[in-house]
Length: 378
Image 1: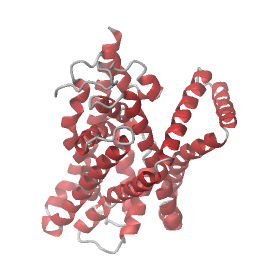
Image 2: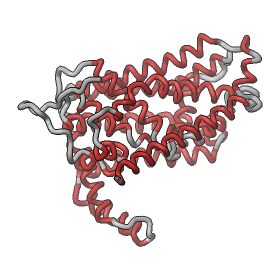
Image 3: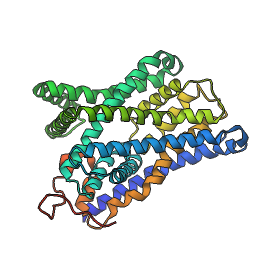
Image 4: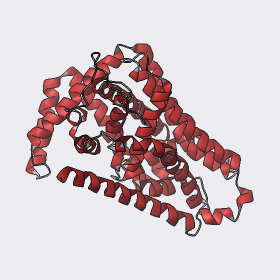
């Protein structure tokens, strides 16, 4: 009886997080200088550029679906784009409505398992996709920060410090993976030393279990990264598509900028500014970085927007990059509510911090000889 109660608590927390985010949106919409004030001067606004902003989001989601399709085809050559689109939408929704997107990958694995992809292949595909995204994000952000760091550090020194820390956190994942590839023994020693220190500071209770879990994750990352390296054309194509996907996402703020008939700032500066916002808000343990995302946008983009329209710009940006994806992906989210998903499996989906392997220790058993999963009717 306890497990259903825990699932219910997680659902309530997600609703609370979304309510908080919606409350912030309403505040910025109806407060002075918000979107309501913008409607008074609708003739000063370009609907075409606003449609371009939403178009960027649509195209980048289609690219994400295509990436999912390409990577799953490593193990399942007949995997179709339509199935990849559904899996992408499931990930999009849970990435938006759960703190730091922790339920996105487990729910995508479950989605793939319903499409006759084995749980092992689904887990591997999601890890491989994550690695490609992480490498692209680190090098993309590094290039932007190096190019425009001096400019932003003069204008917003405190936020740039926070963004730099965010970048280091993202980069540390790559460094740890590469270090693990060269010396697994040394990597484990470093991890043990870190958690031993955390135990002395009373920040962790069971460092041995934490070290074991991290080592298993690194082993999984390493094995899947080696799989990607064996498919060089796919690897290069995936990095390029992910680069394009990030560029389209970051370009949304530029489209909104042009929607206000502003043109002094360059596309490159706006993309760099958006990267700063994303890095600075990556620490917020709320869905979509609620609070930090809005605040960071206002702080950074007040360099480009005047005070009387900055809040309106922020609301439009948030609507395009956060609420719009939730709206169109919500119908796909009911995959986790289907009959046949036991409370134990549902709880595994809601608790991704235990690692992909741990979450799926008791997967749905295949009922045919080839080891594939039966597809459930919608």
